Length: 469
Image (cartoon, rainbow, N blue to C red):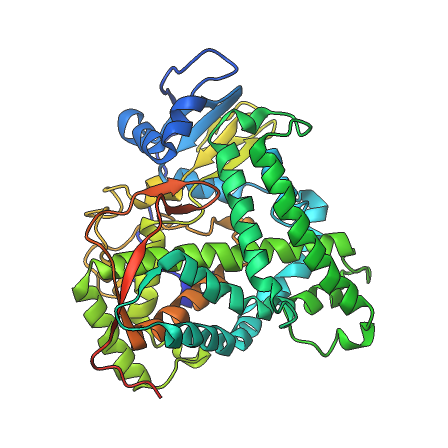
């Protein structure tokens, strides 16, 4: 994570790791079910209950798998930084693998190191800067189409914006397929979420539930279009070095031995980056709209910053670091509603955490949702307070207490892309409109990502002082 993407409050407060003394959590049902049904009914409430009712290290079982849930930031960071040597990647669920295959997200060992070295250059800060103009253009086109008093489905509108931004990934070749691919990814995300919360997590791949059949249809739509684009690129190999989209960069990348990614590997990495750049960011933007609609003071300070920094012109990549309050809004929304709400890894033989041996095969879990809402680290944890990230904030955020993109070597590769996109899209929309949301509280639903349980509707209001050129 670059310095501009870290929380902007003064130097993080280091914490001393307490001894790891796991306590037994809720008893649950006999194996192979364990706590599966209690977790599936309301995962967020269940995990919060582990933290509040039992402590910082709690044993439990997701179905037949023995688990250890961590809440203390120092235990969490030790887990996240140890995933390459002390832990195996958690191979959880059939559905997720159908979507992202063996991408860098699920690869291990030397295969992971090779793929990461090939994928990481495509989303470095210099490349992300080149996509900024597209982000602003797509957000502006959407905002210009909204009309005073119109009621919009916020997530649908945010998804349309991020789908348009996908041309940075696919080189503007998607055309009318953009919406179809977005719809297919929505179906896929819902299928993964359904599997995560139920017995389907442990069913063999040959069992075809209705959810799995829907997923396979969605994946077929995704595969057909992505492979078409890959074939088109490979038919003109001399153009790969001159094209600036992510798909071309993936195809042109070579490892230390001069080997490229195979078409299947390119497909897996492209779809993974797409899911991170589309669904994750559109979800974050949805929660930002919800939070701003309920916080007129925060919105007024946002508009003042936009007027001062931008003076009515569209934002650019050069403005990202100057839009301090805008970035703090994004960070605070990611604290309250981290799209990726649960992280797990499997202990290898010899794994040790805070000086205590972890039995091999134990799934060690942590949750940004519970850490981010812990009153020990965040006073008034349920309140939307972007000022907690001010440089002179009186309550400095402890080190490692904020990790919406994971941590360690396996930090999400698209973290920079997502944060820049969210900030620039927010700035572009807020220059033009207020999006007023109903007063009722939006309840989050934990699927593959953390999204509102029911559609969030907002009324479009023109911003009185807006002067956009």
